Image 1 (tube, rainbow, N blue to C red):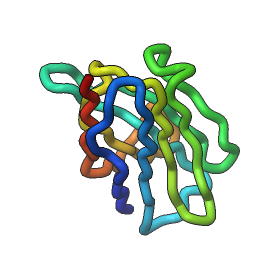
Image 2 (cartoon, helix red, strand yellow):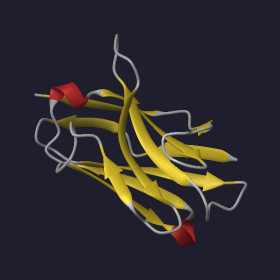
Image 3 (cartoon, helix red, strand yellow):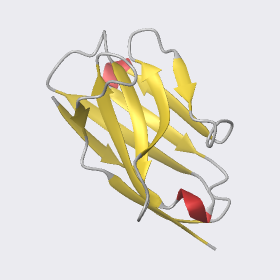
Length: 117
């Protein structure tokens, strides 16, 4: 199983970014996909999860209403749409896959998002 994130970069405060995570190597019909982030000096933070098969979603309170997780089964891709970005959203963002939430066993390499004013 491999997960490859993309879509990170620099964005201004209030802007939007869409991250992508392409999964390969196994079928994902019974798995969950999650997005996490790690900021300098902080622990890894859960952001959002999606049931690959049924599309049910869940969010951390800190991003609810601003971030949206979605999937494209045909492309084996999970997205994280991030709106109204703030400087505190600056972090390395990771996607992960596992049999259930919050048990994730496969991780991507991460993509950096930097929000500046």
